[in-house]
Image 1 (cartoon, protein in one colour):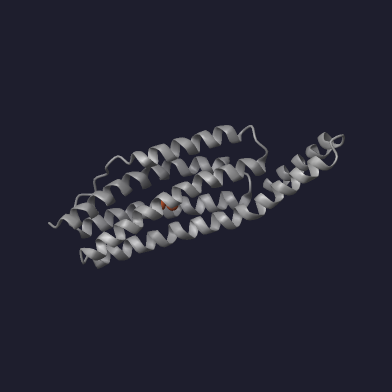
Image 2: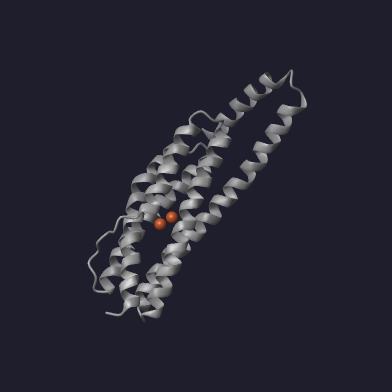
Length: 190
Ligand code: FE
Ligand code: FE
């Protein structure tokens, strides 16, 4: 076996563990999300992630390697941060909590994009074209998810800064208005 192919297998073993961790973490993200579009995005990505696990197993089989997982410490850290974000989000306004969740999720997507990009290059270099194709499918899903999260975040960021401007305009009426906004935000999220 070439050293490039050995490296490829190690990358896939690492990814198998990372994706498996994510199948357990994403349901918590679904539950924590307030905005229906964000909930839907996490739900969709959970289903994609389950398929990605199977794709990695298939890729390893194509290489004649056992579908063994190697602990991915990077993902352990990212998920720990995500769980902290969920905990802190319980005390935040829904908009701010959702934006923090998106930030944590996009860190995960970028980590995956990096790993799949490397793995695909190694597969192409080894002449493992079928394996490279499988990795391309997943890479495309990770990139689309990252893009989708940005399109969900942009209007939320605008809304959050509009809310902040409104709150600064008249300090006496601040409490009344933010109470009103909270109700509105909760209603939108329900
Ligand atoms: Fe993934
Ligand atoms: Fe992903």
